[in-house]
Amino acid sequence: MRLDELGDWRRTHLSNEITPELASAEVTLMGSVVDVRDLGGIKFLILRDAGGTIQVTAPKAKTSRRILAKIDSLSKESSIAVRGKVVTAKQAPRGMEVVPTDIKLLNAAITPLPLDPTGRVKADLDTRLDSRLLDLRRPKTMAIFKIRHKVLQIVREFLVSKGFIEVNTPKIVATATESGAALFPISYFEREAFLGQSPQLYKEILTGCFDRVFEIGPIFRAEEHDTTRHLNEVTSVDIEAAFVTQEDVMRILEELIVRVFNRVKQRCAGELKVLKHDLKEPNPPFPRITYGEALKKLDDAGVKVPWGQDLPTPAERRLGELVGGTFFVVDWPTETKPFYIMPHKDDPKLCCAFDLMHEGLELASGGTRIHQEKLLIKQLRQKGLNPKRFESHLKNYRWGLPPHSGFGLGLDRLVMVLTGAKNIRECVLFPRDRRRLVP
Ligand code: AMO
Image (cartoon, helix red, strand yellow):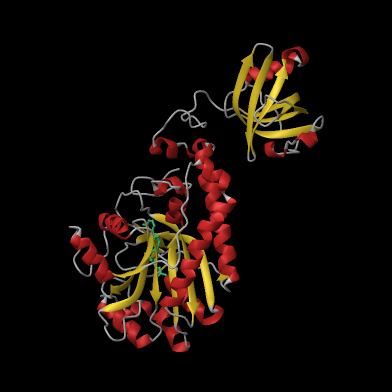
């Protein structure tokens, strides 16, 4: 099929900008072919662009043979440009339609497609992820990523308003930070390096100059599990603040969560409707239960978790049912949490760490950090880590690093609960899991 050049054609309007005031105006639209229908005397072409869809209507009696033939030649999802006149039409889905004066086929899509982008033909998630571009043209998938985009804006607005500075730290690193989470080794010239598990150590150091920092970036976890809530590359919203404790950052997190739910409800009503998701806003203050209380509740419900173990996924789910809604788990065993978490002064078996749970899903974790070098070295040794390997980090503690606290919030999981998605893969453009490295 002969393709046309884009040439000097440029889009004048998006489909959602075609309003009654534009009646009789000449417009140029650009997008993809959703469908072509022939209803006897009229040919209809539905065009989709970033604004939505619009009907292009070609009455056979008034349209040139060349344009009619062109419409006939268009396969679904082909990339096109349409020049035409805006006409008011009560029967058209938007009340307005465009009568074409010229059409360009810019790139043709194959037939049949591996996936139906209207979403009418059901496909399993793997098939959808294999053809992600087509999947992303489905209204429901599109709605998830529009919400994700808004969440990022809301989070940035909020943190900046609280005095946080956005930073970017290296993702190629020399050491582990999160005990329990495995590292991805990479070859770094003649040395071994790793993909960063968390910006943890960098964000802590940066409190020594910027006072309050946040980073939204990828974290890598070489974990084998294949669940609906874990991936090997995720985006985390990390914050760290000087001169505050766990209590203060828990309040910041609570305010942030409430803000995000509220603003998404306000600003993404259309997307939530497409997703048929009735978003329930969590009520502050979020209840707090201790790790010990959580284990007791689970034990009473017949779920045994040995003291000192992190909560496995089934226990998290059950705890979510038992407590309900959004809540904090505090007073974790020191042995369960990473080396940088401050042990309780009176009872060093417990530490100043918290997890934020939402309906049985861990959304965030954080705590008060150790800011004294001696104690940090002791904790490193206790975790079986060699302080020598952390020398470039430890020296910062000799330069008057302030007391500080922070948290890491899983963006993908947050988007899951905001959109009602049951699988984290729905909320990541190109997810990375145990089996998937492409697309
Ligand atoms: P943690 O390891 O708990 O803490 O990670 C923080 C949050 O990131 C998300 N997350 C994940 N989401 C999906 N798949 C995964 N494999 C995965 N791993 C983590 C979760 C989790 O709550 N440095 C600390 C944070 C801090 O203390 O500031 C850390 O990385 O939502």
